[in-house]
Length: 353
Ligand code: SAM
Ligand code: SF4
Ligand code: SF4
Image 1: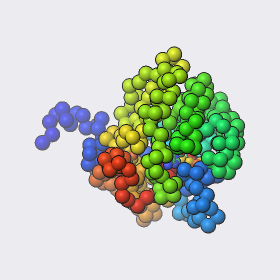
Image 2: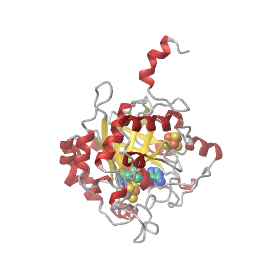
Image 3: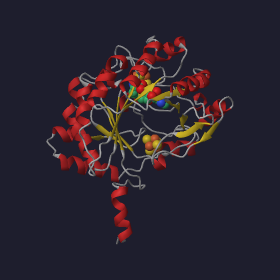
Image 4: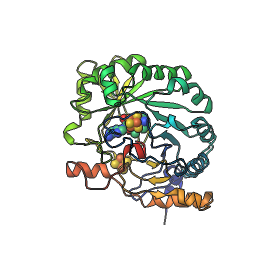
């Protein structure tokens, strides 16, 4: 029997999985397509002309996405992130944003609404995204060297246009802006300091992400990973840092503050410092599969449920049923095994990072 104290705590805990982790964040992929071919995410040898992307009717419609998000928010999700592929390629994305911005948690609060983008279309879209109700953007920038940036995105997309997109987002009020940089040894590890210096100057929050073994196509090897500790050491040697306390339960980044007061920088140690114990994220792929881990090998088919006529409460039951059984902790297992844990893999561009 539950004690009165335990019952009192329940609303704060919300829905718990098999390891006691709450469901707080929902990442929604709105397309599996992208205008970049980042070498570590959508290598062109695989994502070439013959690659079969989803047809439009395979994607969840905006109505369907809103219904899923509404059910999740009803279960305690207070953070929604739109991703892809490249989410700004989804036609009419502002309409989806405006409908998601109307959702309210059971306590009447507005969930935090963010979007992760490669920034290519931000100059054009920033103001309309803000007007639709988007709170914040995260922009992925892996190098400040134009030639290197073009080689990494592998479509020769110029760095200046993405930096201009970041400026447009700042002007539109889509901050605090976060910048994601995936560092791969021998490719862009020379960029750690330049990236740190540029974005501390601009006042944007930079997060270095360890290169992960997502998908089956990026040729991952542990030797390619630059450990977060090394990233921090390299920055600290020039611009002294001190650790910051985590901002929010379930936050993926370890945050550091520049001792001279010039903002902060973070590292996401998905490989060298697994954080499965506090992972509160669920993901919905563009075709409506619900995944309880970035490395899960199969998802629950929400689209079948939606198109089969399920109502809101059936949808909520399905989400809570899947979450209650969740036992994932892939990154911890990978660390224990010292490398890749055995499994089938879904691609990052499919599940959305
Ligand atoms: N296209 C958007 C973008 O690039 O921001 C959103 C989707 S992308 C899959 C989301 C994030 O995943 C990006 O910041 C990207 O750098 C990161 N990512 C992709 N593949 C990765 C990998 N193998 N390891 C770590 N991060 C990765
Ligand atoms: Fe596209 Fe983002 Fe993947 Fe790069 S990281 S290929 S921009 S989905
Ligand atoms: Fe969460 Fe899975 Fe990543 Fe662990 S490996 S932090 S459970 S998404």
